[in-house]
Amino acid sequence: DLSQYIIYRSFVGGFSPTSADSIAVVPKSKNSFIDSSVVNDSTYYYRLVAVDVSGNRSIASDQAIGQPRDFTPPPAPLLLSAKGKDARVELQWRRVGDPDFLRYRVYGGPDGTTPVQLDSIDVSIDTSAVIAGLVNTTYHRFYITAVDSSKNESVPSNSLMALPNAPPVSVSVARVQS
Image (cartoon, rainbow, N blue to C red):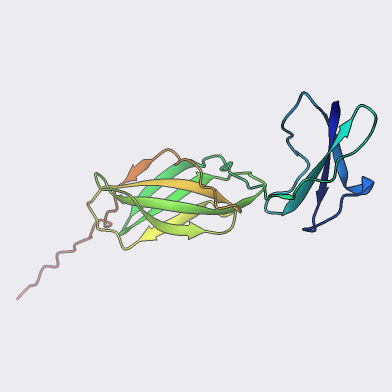
């Protein structure tokens, strides 16, 4: 009569289970186990042994391989301002405090068009960007995303619109006397 399962884990493929590799004892009523003591992007090898009520053990199962991944994106940044200047827009946003932060991505384009990625900022404390080469008198819409070390991208921040515009031109009229 089956009593329980012993689950073994190793970092080495093809391992022969020892008591040092034992990570869990699972009752016969359970047919699954979640290993929550793993690190993302590491490879783990598992085997299990069935134990009957008399303590007799089966031979180890075939090896199963697991490699956990991070699928959780960071939180979205908060876009604080978009200020139009001559042929450019200056953006500022609130820093994302995610522990595995990798970069910010800046998206934008003329209002009413599909936004494209315009910039990528690799420093978490850098929370501003200047998007240059824009057409004055054309409204542009922008948003920011955060990307983590597993390449998960946040949902877009709020979007803001700005109008690049040339500074007023000062004209002096000189009177010519003859």
